[in-house]
Image (tube, rainbow, N blue to C red; front, side, top):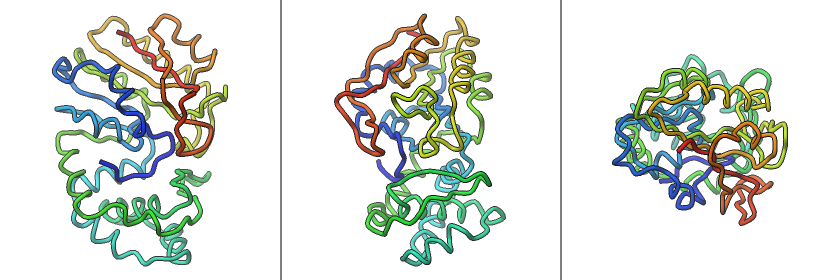
Length: 265
């Protein structure tokens, strides 16, 4: 199921990635994604129960709105006028006090009509990508939104930093981690890939949070940049190269990715 344009999405190489997952039947606890992003892995895996999290408030509003109010989200989404002028009016208007179904429809509209599906916020925290056109707006329809609402039925959805999520995992949970990164750059801080910036210091903080899980009966798998600094952080875990991955160009996959899979099992 595809509904969101999202930089760094794993949608194009799901089959390669899911090969490394434990079987769905073996996961007795929750499936947990601290960086849910475009949600393509969650939607493909279809776990029985899940916790989906992200620090991006707009993104979480989108998931929550669609989960609870799919028809209202579609109604508002479909009534936004087309064109560049309308895009900027919607993008720049006040929305924080609006109902969650309006906020969800708004960010879905911006995502479908912005330039190349980028997801970038300014220093004020507001979405600030320019207009890209209407070509990809109607790739989704009302039925897609209804199906997504159903797919999210058994999932808790929270707006949270990854560290808080990892502090509350329990035995038998499975964690899939896809932190924001741009392959090949040591600092890994491209605003197109992150809500704000995900720095190397954040990568260290993530590795330490995973180490604190220790010997609990919890499995986790991560995709990350194939860089010596990242490999050094996870030298005690199994590391495999991803066969297909994200290229240096947004939204384009490559057979020579600079990405790795790291797991504790």
